[in-house]
Amino acid sequence: MEAYFVAIAIIVAIYTLLALGLNLQYGLTGLINFGHVGFMCVGAYTAALLAEQGWPAPLSFLAAAILAALAAYPLGLVSLKLRDDYFAIVSLGFSEVVRIVVTSERWLTNGVQGIPGIPKLMGFTGSGLVQASAVLLLLIAVNIVVILVMRRIVHSPFGRIIEAIRDNEDAVKALGKEPVGFKVRVLMLGAALAGIAGAFYAHYIGYVAPDQFIPLITFQIWMAIIMGGVGRVSGALVGTVILMAFLEGSRFLRDVVPFISEVEMASVRLGVVGLALILFTLYRPQGLMGDFTRR
Amino acid sequence: MASFVELVLTGITSGLVVGLAALALTLVFGIARFANAATGDMMTVGAYAAVVSMAASGSFTLGVVAGAGAGIVVALLAHLLVFRRLAARAPVTSLLASIGVAFVIRAAIGVAFGHQQKVFGLPVVRPWRIFDVRVQPIDLAVVIAAAATLLVVFLILYATPIGRRMRAVADDRSLARVSGISPDRVMVTMWALAGGVCAVAGVMLGAKTVVSPDMGWDMLLPAFAATILGGIGHPVGAVVAGILLGVVQEIATPFVGFTYKIALAFFVLLLVLLVRPAGLFGHSEGAR
Picture: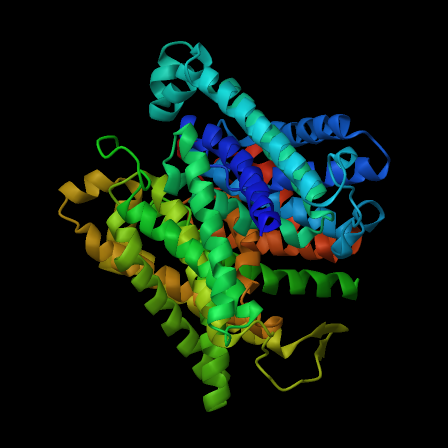
């Protein structure tokens, strides 16, 4: 039972990292990133391939973050000068193309079979529950550091500018600041976070395959940050916990309602994420516990 | 040479599918002002409705009509239940909600019909030979269906009062409003058109390949690329760009491989955004 809760907590912590990155991009800056899972995928495969080569984890995690950020750079440069929704389309396309590339380039990624046997993190602590708890502690520490940095960003001049870009880009331009540079930096920062989350994911699950990085993941994160409250650093955590309760709950639902097959359950999950996106945008755009007075 | 002509012909037929999807996207983009991510899944609706009604009646023509009808119903439902209520808010909200609509449609189809691929079960016919060039009869059917749909859409857009009002709203919404044009009726007509066009595109795609719950979603990227290449809100541009994209994809397939067909659309998209974000036919102020 403890093992189960630790496992869930690890996944929550990984999703929280993803949600923090998206919250920085959408919640604080207003970037509509529909391709978050693409950056996660880049990070996961980087970590997996470097672990195969015997790189130590700190270095491969750094590489995962850097490569994910570098992948974001040209995308941002091309599309962030244009209308908001262009970036949404480009980022969604990017995540699909990343999945096509890791599916097709068999010499590097082993295609649809994926890369198995990625070593567990914190292996020196032993095995089983102790090792899993060590990974969880590490993830919590990373999350705390990221949250502290986010809070610093929110209260820094940089944070004020990105929030101003979200609220009124023309005003920022009129004040002599070029929004594109800030947007590209925010995009790369969020992508780096997604890359680190992907690296954790790869090491925790133990294998990576293209099927793990479908757009549904991106929109689960969107659902999480909208439920938790867009633009709130704490919202990322709250939303992720609710999301995970739902995802895990749907697994138990199958034990109660045995006539639903696994394939049907996948459709049901997709439908619930879709329905949640619709209902929240219609009725509670500020999130479950968001401020009623704003927007 | 003959095989090159065959590639171009295949490109044109698959490009017509992309072009129709892009036409639906561009109508919504021009008038409701957001990128409708549910476009692909409205295609899937059309394909499934056509498969079901063709299995029941045995007539492909009836299948196309039933598919178009189902697409119109679903698009109108999406408009009335979701998009109309979001019209006053930022376009981002509608975009996000359209992803939700897309997922709900795909989930409903997945639950109702399962994930096995379905086929139309059209009789296998020997391809015709015209000057040494092989032409599949199904491709001809696709071209006819597409041409008929385009004819209807462009007649409505350019030869009827409601079409004139639609173009007026697309040009300048507030000016249209003060001229006494009711946006509500324009929106309903636009969504019916978009849904019907999507559905026909879906039927065509399903007839050429197979029908599965994911088929429409996978077409989203080429459709977006064609919409932007044609210039957002530009119906003729969308169709021309779709055909161009289809031909480029087919010609490039022997070089880049089948799996990178979709990825190619993405690079076309990036290239257009880099070089000419307004698209081939658009005005530059629309893109920034």
